[in-house]
Every structure is written in C-alpha cells, then in structure tokens.
Image 1 (cartoon, one colour):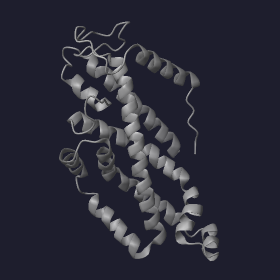
Image 2: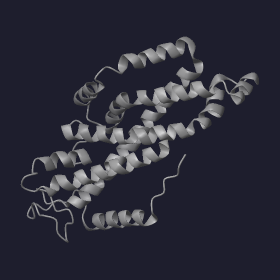
Image 3: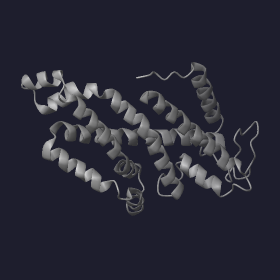
Image 4: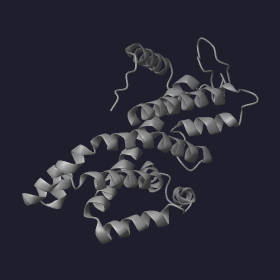
Length: 256
C-alpha cells in the first residue's frame, strides 16, 4: 500500500488558520447590527445575515461533516466487513442467502428510504448514522467477501483449521489481519460518499439541524443569497470541493 505524504507545512497552515479564525470569533456568535459584510481583513470569508463570521462557521462545518463522515463510515465499513467475512468464509447456503439479500436491496432507491427515516424519526445524529449506513454498507460487504474467498483456502488458514480452532477465532485472529489493508481502502473510498450523502441530507433539511452546522447547511443557506452575497455559498462550496478532492486523491493512492 502506498503511503500518502502531505507536506508538514500544509498541516501547519491549516491548523494556524483554524485556530486564528475560531479564537477571534465563535461559529455561533451573532452581531445583528453588523449584518451581511463582504470578505475583509476582519472577517476573511465575510459574514451572513445574522452577522456571524463565515470563516469560523466554515471551519466548524468542516469539522462537523468530517466527524459525522468518519463515524458513519466506521459504522458502515465495520458492518460491511463483518457481513462480507461471514458470507465469504462460511459459504454454502449462508453465503447464498446473504448475497441474495444484497441483490434484492441494491436496485431499491435507498435514498428515498433514508429521507423518509429522517423525516419520520427525530432528526438526531444517531438516526443520521444509521440512515447513512443503510445505503453504503453493501459495496464494502461485496469487496470483503471477494477477498475472503481468495484467502480462505490458503495454507495458514488450513493449518488453523487443522489445529481445531473455531471459525470465529480463525476469522478474527488469522483472516482479519490479512484483509486489513482492503478494509482501510474501503474506508477511504466510502468516506467521500458518506460526506456527500450527509451534506445532501443537510442541504435538503433532513440531516443536521441548526444551530448545529455542516457544509450542507451552509451551502443551503448560501444558495438563498447567492445573487446578493455570493461569498455565502462560494466559500462553503470551495471547502466541500477541497475535502472531496483530498479524499479522492488519498483513495486513488491507496488503490494503487
């Protein structure tokens, strides 16, 4: 697996910018008398209609979107890995049933189900995690199953079986470490999709709810004022594109 090297000074610039932006202004600090202000030396990204510093709000939204994306991806990949390992290792009828379940679910427009879940149940972060996991776990499950099928007849697996180790022990002690790199790749590949899904749900108003903020919320708010104060949508959109670009490059590097 290729290592991804990002220059140290890039991390330094990002850290200094975030610290400076959030020390001066809080993402929820309002100044109604200030109102909408274009980008300047005092407010680097300008302000919104409530006089809130947009730079602080964008940095906080990036943190929120990345945090939700990371945790939801962790849940998604964990379940997909478990599902794929069980299906590939046990084989037979268990594999047939588990794969047919995926075949049935794949054509279903699960996004509509996610939106309905978020509208019916309380719009809580935990519900958001579960809703996102419903959509994204199946690809990971298929990838892991294919990898398990490749290595389950390997010599060290046969030796472990011959020593009388239980199947779950073989899966956890011998097989899991050998597919760890594939799991990491699945995580990096899934993370951008999860962030896009979370931002899309927040954009529609069924994801994160104010006063909390994510990139989807900021983009949705900025779209209302794109003709009068375009910076409200430009900067959140640029942050979103930058995150997607970095994660995509990382995923491509890991797949090589």
